[in-house]
Length: 140
Image 1: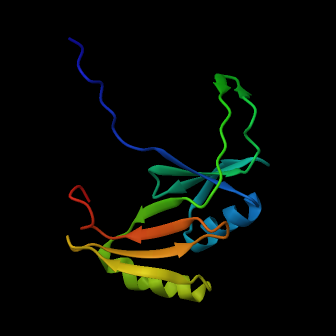
Image 2: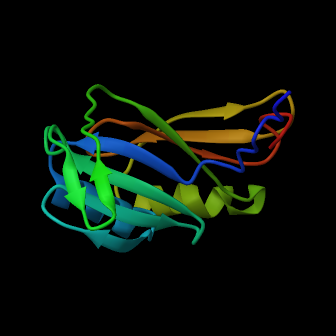
Image 3: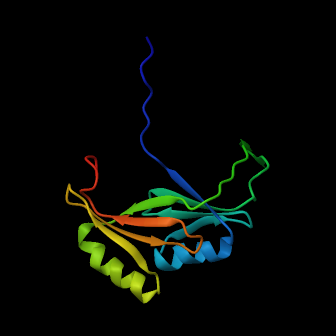
């Protein structure tokens, strides 16, 4: 009998965008995510120095991408997707102020039964972003 190999987390989250420069600027300016690498088809941004937010220009990854270490298979996506970023509960008011100062509308705020709270807003491509405090899930 084979033991189940371990998965230790999610490293990358990917969004597909119409205007890569605009999207990168939004996440760099609003969230202060640091750009790790990028070119005309993608931008890789550091989230809390432990996760990567990948922004791909829609339609720019329909072909395999050869690299010195191997080939990245094609991928693409469409539609308005969702990503949640964790924040400390004590930072919620600061985030509300920051979003307001940058003209980003908070679309909704939710108080969760376990005690967590979420702020929902949109990026320039209308992806639904969430800032979530501990207490939403039994594991967070």
